[in-house]
Length: 608
Ligand code: F6R
Image 1 (cartoon, rainbow, N blue to C red):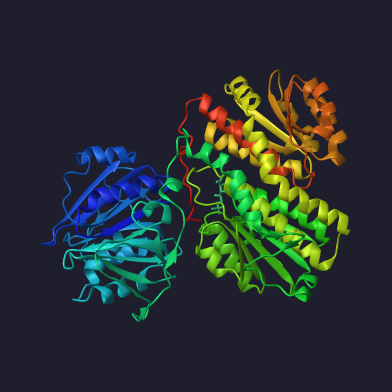
Image 2 (cartoon, rainbow, N blue to C red):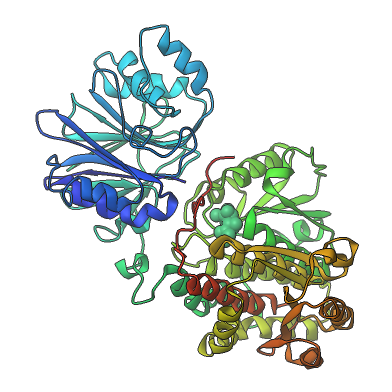
């Protein structure tokens, strides 16, 4: 949800900013802009509606911008439609301050009124413009003091990049509930909304803390807390290379990330050491695990779907009650949190506003919290009591793939780890599940090695208007995820239902040729799912089954069947997900759509 980049060095800033914005475009892509400052304090701003290319064109391939300090922004509009005026950076009335912002200023109307009665006029419809004017209003000779005063007025979430004409050698940045990292170079320093945006320049980062302000110059990085005390942070060095943020020959990041799943799964599952599971940052005593009375799992979108699989799995192997909630619903339903409740929050980005708010609510109500997160040092990872990183590596495509399957794998690890401690399943069952987990990367490879049938089916159904997905139990969660994948990137209306539910209303939509993707993996529920597939086939539906080989009888009733490799039914949802990811991907590819950046979406949803 909006990407920010900042640079201070001795060379031209614009190419660095444009390159960073290119890497951040997945966060928002309806408009973009940059501001650079030269040694005399002149600020130049260029903004353009549309994809980053419009900005590059407007600046003659960034040649027209000369300063060596600057900030840039790629936008996902919240306040005000995407146009040149509403794009960031926003300038103060006197043109001395330029601001880029990711997040939402919740009290911006009040602040607008405060400024209007003091003679300020607004050019844009954004919440961000108030910040530029407030900086001018509060500036009294000391930029840090000015920043502090302005931040004290803001309610909401923000990562900001700020230029001030009086300090042309540096820019300022701050973060609260929105991501921002500092990149350390040699005679040049950076900030960005995420690390991959800077991998071309550095692998050394500082993760800014909540509310911290940083002053970034070519040779110095000074960080201050809200009380203006200087703080030191350790430097984090990542071992990713630039290719992590490139497509590496794949036509889309989504396909690249689908193919990265064997490696990503192997990484998350590396916590299996022989017959044991060792969860690095999850520090529960045996008694604490035994005493857990209830588990809440919370996430948004695909993370929520991972949570449903987690619920089925944990209930099954730990025999403890698990509730799953959408983060946006959880905090407003006045959840009942008992003394021994554990809340697991799931988030690839670790910055999703609803999930972060739900985590805080669970903590406020006294729950212990465990985060399942991909992005290192993200807000959710830092605020939860314990964190299990999913180790998927950077995910650039807006539609999650490896982010999702590694979340599911992480939940399996948690469930099985707890089950091992409380001895809630027989040792043979434990060993069997562990074995299936160990085999997952190879099983995913098997699917990826032979995608032709899925590709063929995608081409067959790319013209569909509506697609239904059905399944029972964990297969229902897989259906939900498959439908989300398809609709978000192919724009085909797709709905998932528990297979037994269709006949309670939705079956009236089934007509001749309606595609019904039937997930039939769970052997215990197979007969029931088969009957449901027959019910829709009888009404003219075209049944496409995704099935376990043990349920091969579905072939007699389905128009097409894709089998997943052999696997424990409890672990198989990862394999089903890969098949349905490929299906969604190839449908969108057949339609020639912009797969990595679907319309209206953004990767990291940092607004509620
Ligand atoms: C779907 C998708 C979204 C995310 C959701 C949560 O493909 O990517 O539904 O799963 O926005 O995001 P995180 O996991 O970053 O909290």
